[in-house]
Length: 157
Image (cartoon, one colour):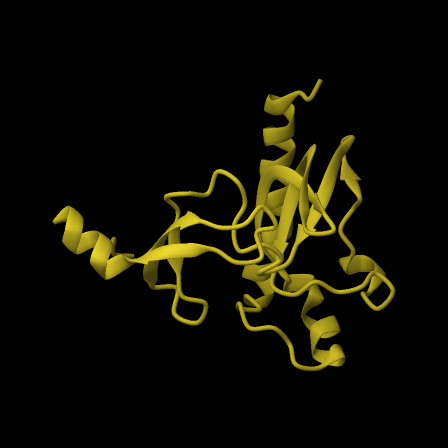
């Protein structure tokens, strides 16, 4: 049985640790490197989020809960500097490295806000897609807001 409270604690502590690299060295952004050399050089600041979710193997969600490390670009362990490799497990909890667009969405994501890749502005509201998650279907955000007669409220920094 998975100790979810302990897993959340591990996720929080590990997330604080690895996401600090992006703050200290400057975020690598969401653009992928266009050369292997550039990708390897940026791999230390590659993580942009940490979550808990089901491990994905060969594009399919498994029933194994894992600490998911979201990266801007997935690199083969054979070319990554050893100090930038993520552990296969943390305190006995498996990890899963999630690259952008490994899956557009997974089961349970209906109703999620879809943001543009380059602008991070709201573009749609996700509602359907195949089990593989390789693509998804969303309603245009302008149409959603208009039909519901609501406005998108943006916070200020």
